[in-house]
Amino acid sequence: MGQNLAKLNTETSLDSVSLWGITRKRLFRRKSAVMGMIILGMLILVALTAQWLAPYDPTKSMLDVPDYTGKIEKRLPPCVHAFGCPQSEPQHLMGLDGNIRDEFSRLLYGARISLVIGFATVSFSILIGTVLGALAGYFGGWVDNTIMRVMDVVLAFPSLLLAIAIVTVLGPGLINALIAIGIVSIPAYARVVRGSVLSVREMDYVSATRSLGGNTYEILFRRILPNALTPLIVQGTLGIASAILETAALSFLGLGAQHPTPEWGSMLGQERNQVFTAPHLVFYPGLAIMLTVLAFNLLGDGLRDALDPRLAHVS
Image 1 (cartoon, rainbow, N blue to C red):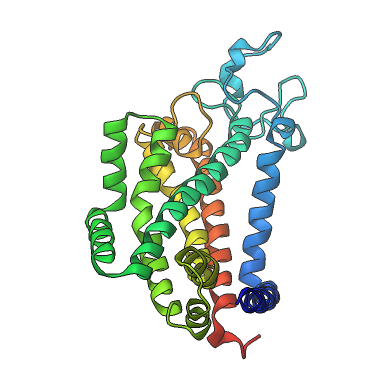
Image 2: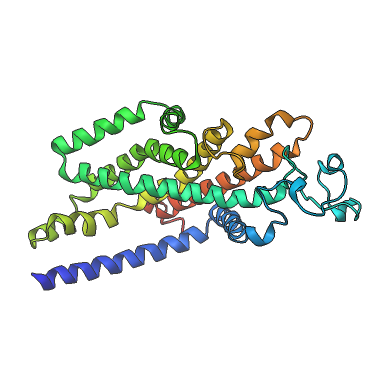
């Protein structure tokens, strides 16, 4: 019996390797997915090298920089030497914000914060949602009804409003904003995993494992879940974009990242009153959020197409 289970494990592993190899080839044949990966790769590179690329401390005012000469009011607009800004004035590629801090440095460090927010929030949601959805789909009955009714209650509220309510209870702050967004995102992943488990648990290889004496852990976590993760991967990729947007919205309202943390949403909120007098202070963080969300959406759409067996003839 042990040899039969080992053989079944090997066959399943080989099938998985083959599946992911085919998926990778399909993914790289889709221009939108490749574009998303290029943008995302650039953002990750910026986030990893922000401390070397940023010319100034993103949280320190230029008034606190020693030997910083010149009139501050003249350097509020962007100053780029290559575009005609006098060499005698310090260079600020994107100008200075309302607190006399370098906007370019804050934007670079904001990439690091936003990506961490997206990945951390989705990882938290997927971990809990996968466990709940797997238990609901595998055991069924009262376990399924209890878990999914709780998920339905959470889904009954608009996600952003529920996140605002949770942050209001926990208190403003980036960590609390991550927890709130993670909680409101759990039902989406739980429902996806439950649906996949319900379809996979009746497959022949699951029945074979059960007949060979496989226990609940082996059947659920080694047979069913690895073959039910395809839609979860797509949902998670798209969920990162949503998490970044929702965190930016909470920071814009003053409930997420607090001063002086260089987070794109809080940068928008702090400079919203200068949209007509200094539009670049609003344009650059907004553009950064747009590009990040676009990258994850393009990658998610490409993954969905690559993992869809109905599109195999296209590849």
